[in-house]
Amino acid sequence: MEIKRDVYLNRLIVRKHNGFIKVITGIRRSGKSYLLNSLFYNHLINEGVAEDRIIKFAFDTAEDLLKIGENPIVLDNEREDRKVDPSKFLNWLQPQLTGEGAYYILLDEVQKLGAFESVLNGFLRKSNLDVYVTGSNSKFLSKDILTEFEGRGDEIHVLPLSFSEYYEFKKGDKSEAFDDYSVYGGLPAVALMATEEQKSQYLISQMKNLYLRDITARYGLKDDTAIGEVLDVVASGISALTNPRNIANTINTVHGVNICSTTVDRYIGHMEDAFMLTRVKRYNVKGRKYIGTPYKIYFEDVGLRNARLSFRQIEGTHIMENVIYNELRYRGYQVDVGVVESREIDGEGKEVRVQREIDFIATLGSKKYYIQSAYAIPDREKYEQETASFDKTMDSFKKIIIVEKSTKPRRDEKGYVMMGIKEFLLDKDSLEA
Image 1 (cartoon, rainbow, N blue to C red):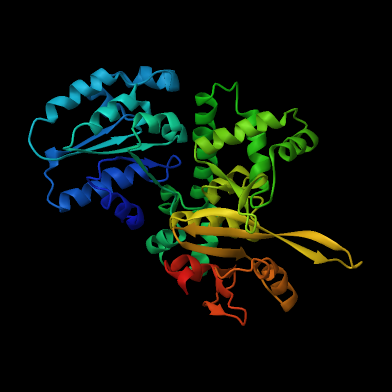
Image 2 (image 1 turned 120 degrees about the horizontal axis):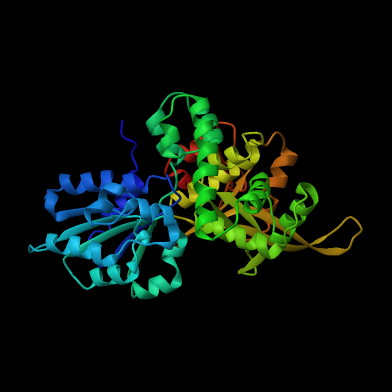
């Protein structure tokens, strides 16, 4: 059965022949290759594009490397230090580009190709080539590389399955599906697995033997012990404000490992580069400026986060917040953590400065939403606590509270909208409710 990724497929379709290199990024195993080589390829075929006009090559598969005379065993043994010879690739490719009309070039894991910036830049100078590439490392889209592309690189970032994609594939009871998704996440391979044992073993193995191993090899680390300690503390504290110094102090005190904040910051950067997680800055709503630290950290996939902790810390409040963050990104929003400052009178009659948090500010063009993730609101006191930051914004942007309990969107006397998490996730227009 095919897992649909219509949102990403449509993002590729609308970019056809736009004169840019279409760069598909995302964490390993998120479905980039499937999107490009199956879903998009099938779209082209169904549109009447001849097969010989679609050229596919994967730089991480032995079968394709042998086509151009590369030894995959040598490349694998030397890992990041050895790249595919661009001359061999171009000598294989050029004879296939002999006819008139458009060609579609689909390249997987192109960062493994030596001098790939120059190769792709050369493609930009040929008006009949429409080029799509995938990469699993954010360094692939660094400022220098975009400069090499002359500003003509167009990124499509692919997340693991959203809950709506997951549920469309799994069907069944919505609450049971969400519980499963909250534990095991949205990696496509996990969605295809039948038992909890399969899912948990796969996720634990992938985290240890793929993601951390990749980072260790890419950055020349002696082993993954220290970065693993950082990952453990970060995973335990998702959705909480933190900074490298706090993380280092926790590791030094609780874990008995000597590590400095600079190293912690570097390791978090490595994990961001591998698309394992994202740091989210705070934004001062009234001051209209970003605050550097502390910040929040969210995982690209909650299943991998839970696996790192051996599925021992699955707190509904924090997981739900991480899922909401990923959903907003899936819908294309720029997401920040909001801070609202106000001057108020305390219990002693003194004027004090108060900072309140808005979990998410979601922005897309002229659209802006303030969103609070509140696992449960059992009484009026809790409601007032959750909406106090909304009250202080003094603007007209839409304000939404998302709770765990299944609740259809409803608006209160202040104009604030409350809805259940499943209603939010399964309705693509839920923010407009």
